[in-house]
Image (cartoon, rainbow, N blue to C red; front, side, top):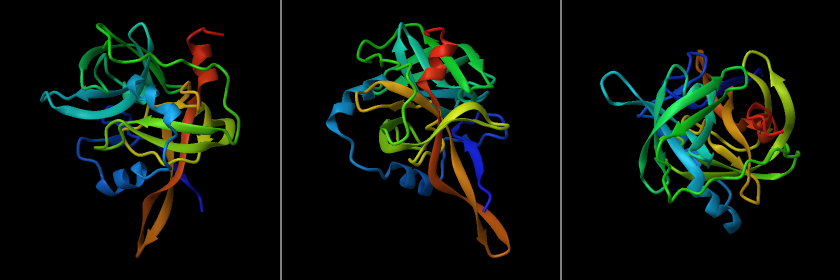
Length: 235
């Protein structure tokens, strides 16, 4: 059965990339939070995780995604999270809300960089690992899927780097579930280093009477840290 892919982010995303509105599907949130217990070594990395939101014309939150700070007030996130926006609201795990300016966004790779003016001193900058993880490596994705802010999911690298026609120039595959709002969230290795950012999840059509519905498959896509490092001219 042919599968379908979608990106997981805020309501600023282009139509082809499903948005995460302030009122998400509770069933999807429940499915994405259920995960294997996380080892204690990875917990300190949570303080580097950010929640990025966009504001509509009415002044209310229009949607959100996730991100990770890598130092000097720089926050990595998915390109479709900041799509069409010059500024973003950036919330830290400790609850501080910061103003973020979108420095650049690359739709081809679905990567964006945001700058916050006054970084939260309680937030720890994550280390960006410029070596692509290997198939079978243990990984942890963190972010704010749906209404569940700052959660951590665990899984493994399930597929090597590849081009996804019409979606992403270079992504890897993970066997963990990701729902709306997790886009841009960091993928950590066991050492707490960022080895990628989540950009989407795979959906499969399920027949319901005379129609089809879409269901999550427990497979997600992330841009590897090696690709991000090249974009940041670190290698």
